Image 1 (tube, rainbow, N blue to C red):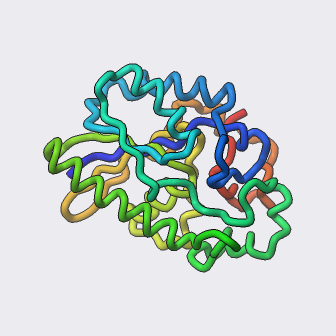
Image 2: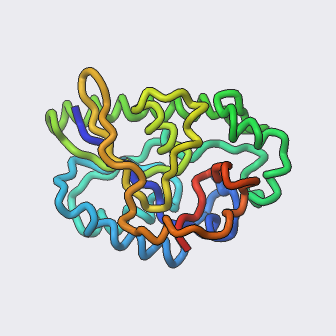
Length: 232
């Protein structure tokens, strides 16, 4: 079965503004995000890629453009099922103000029970993303053979939920996983089990340096909803 290269989109204007973008249209890469996207072809240069699948949101398509420019003829597909979580009424709001919402504690500690007002539940988000990966695995294998490698560009919470599924982890544990902007996560799927080969690899160790708490978190133990802005 195929190897899936999960790429989170590069840093966006919403990430740097501390806003939960969700599916808000027009959210683009910021200057650092564009630099991250430009570096992606070099990071993946040693891989023979069968296809690229993307969330239809602008920040993902912008992240993939340098890779597509570097590899003419590489097919691009979009799939709504790997679009960002529908945060509903939370979309477009400052992460810092969301820490006071009672639902935030559920999102942090019991995400399988979290449903965003006017949006979707985190369980539904994971289910659609997992279904998309299973379908694309079958399609890529049928069209390109066993052992093919393909890229999927998506969003922080989507990638975290896919990693949790690959590891056999309950969704309630997925906030323990981190996926920074333009990070690469690799999962090799086999008939009996997936293997997590890389997790959140950016090649940049600056993000490991202790720094001030990110906006949108209430304590050092909280995860940033949507994935955060990564290293400064």
